[in-house]
Structures are given as structure tokens and as C-alpha cells.
Image 1: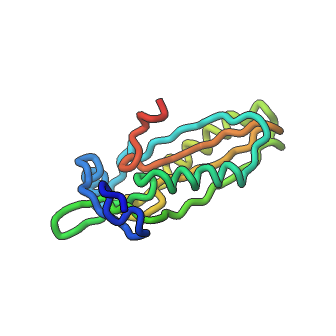
Image 2: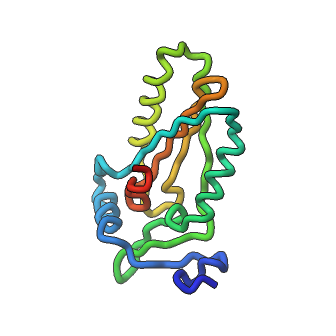
Amino acid sequence: MNELMPGADSGRACRLPATNVQERFLFVERAGGRENDATVTFAWRLRGPISESSVAEALRRIIERHEILRTRLVATETGIEQEVLAEAPFHLACLDLRAMPAKDRIERVHAIERDAAEEPMDPCRPGLFRATLVKTGTDEAVLLGVAHHCIFDGQSTA
């Protein structure tokens, strides 16, 4: 059993105190608002033979390893807590832009990234990380990721 996170190895969810930032995001969500900075996005260019199933499996393994990617916020009688789940839903969306004229592809990738960032995420529901694999060439793709700010601050992508 993991001494720092009771229940983490047993398949049960465990709870930890929420941070001030997490509490703020949940407060805004409950008030019916949406903050412009509620999500963090990233785009990574991939080159070489790219298998959708390999990328999806790699991301699933990352989610399995990192508790924060399996975390949601929970309101309790005493306040807001982080709940780390044994697993979180994940689906890699895949788009193929190879039939599109090359000059239009990068603009379309940016539009897909903007749309993904604007799609709401409920910090109380698991699955606060989404990804889309966009094929842009025979051996080229862009991996777009979107995470709710309450689980990802973007510092690790800098």
C-alpha cells in the first residue's frame, strides 16, 4: 500500500485536500461561469511512423501512472477535496487531414486546438485530460492535449 496515498494501490479512490486554485475553479463552475483560463492546451509535432493505437496506449499508461490525471474534485460537508480514482475514462480522438491541401492544414490544426480548449470540462467528473491525434502527413501528426487547469498547470510542458 502507498503510505502517501492510502487506497492508491488497492483500487479504491482516495481523497486529499484541494488546493486554493482547485477550489476557485469549482466555485466558478458552480456559479455558472466559465473562466477563460480553465484549460491548458499543448500541441506536439510527431514525426515518423505513427500508430493511433500506440499513441493511445502510451497516453493510457501515463494516466495510469499519474494520479493527478485520474483526479476529480468533490464537495464534502467540510469543503472541497481532490478524489484520486483508480482509473479515469480516456479516449484518443483521431482526425486525418492528409486529404486537405497542405497550405490549409496548419490553420485547421489551430482551429481544432481552439475548439478543444473551449469545450467545457466539469472538474467534478473524471476525465479532465483529453487528447486528439491529427494526422497531417504520411509520417507526420500533431498531438493536441487539453487538461483542466485544476489538474495541470502547464509548467511541465515549458
